[in-house]
Amino acid sequence: MSVFHQGLLAPLDKNNVDTDQIIPKQFLTSTSRDGFDKALFYDWRYLDNGELNPEFILNESRYQGASVLLTRDNFGCGSSREHAPWALKQYGFEVILAESFADIFFNNCANNQMLAIALPSETLDQLFTLAQQQALHIDVDLAAQQLRCNGFEAIAFEVRADIKERLLSGLDFIGVTETQGEEIQRFEDELAQARPWQ
Image 1 (spheres, rainbow, N blue to C red):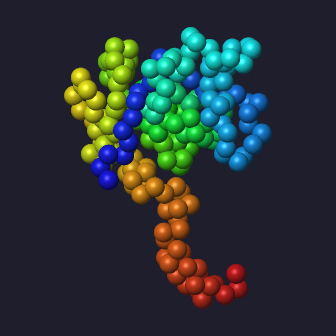
Image 2: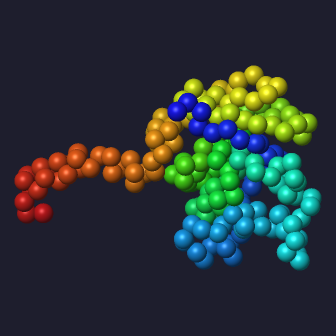
Image 3: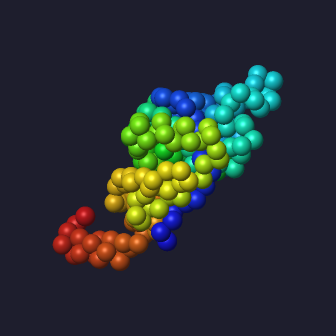
């Protein structure tokens, strides 16, 4: 499959969005991976009375159903909680575009079948401008490593080969390991013969 994802883009024009802003610590008591969508950006999305904050960008009607998040530099910094990509994924985001990502967050995204793409700040600026002018739908061609959208030339992006393979195959780290079951068993059998005392 060439096109990994097609979706509406939502612009979150903020630098240094840390994992505590993505999902605050009070929502980290569960490890079931369910129900985190409501906690995403909780302190920004909701007012003190629990109602939606009309001034927060993701609450605007034109961005409802967005699955591509456009943001700025150093996204996902802070503590290494895997709940952050869980919350983004459960909300509906499949692709995140930013200038850079915190390393642990970046790897957690890949292991949760989300594509985090680093782009130059100039390209991000242009995408932010377009997103304010019109509903911007993005085609993410992972095989060709290109982004396509109306009013913009195709944008090339880099992606690590192992992440590309996992996303295209739909496998996480454990899934990749399971595909090598025969090789693992053969290694264990040979090791048992070579070192029977272990």
